[in-house]
Image 1 (cartoon, rainbow, N blue to C red):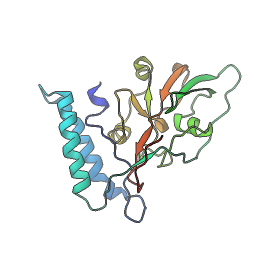
Image 2: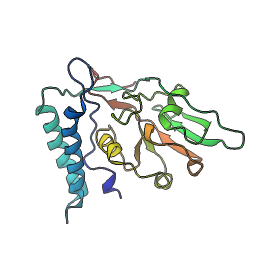
Image 3: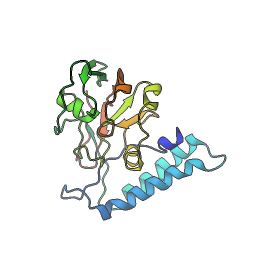
Length: 210
């Protein structure tokens, strides 16, 4: 399952034209095809998982950045893009979740079933960007699940989420997109860490959080 979670995940971000507009579905399709094909290589007999990640990280990055004039690589510190809302939990049905921010500070909340991590973070003024508005079209709501056991209680990420996770900065084997993880009673006590940086092709500069 580890191999299926992603291979050569290195951290780009949503694709935009020079005008700042998002790419059309037709323009974005080739990228998704490349990502899916690279993930299939993890099943090659005798292949080294780490080697594939290293080689594909380099080759695919070159394809994406040097093979198209519409792409430019840039980084940005995480910034909030507020959208959505969360539901107040009913008495006795609260689900506990903890976010660990870039400074290592813990933020504990009680939330309702069905709320997703992106909306929870933004509703509580935590720094999670969500550049695509929670439509699973970027990786700026990337979170790291602290417990592998808790990670395994979540539904498997679908192809779209895996494609975006392949673009995330600081990817781990328990990485998920916050917009795609909905709280359930089984996830009571969930702890996730917010990466200190995101990579976003919509940004024009590089700034690391200090």
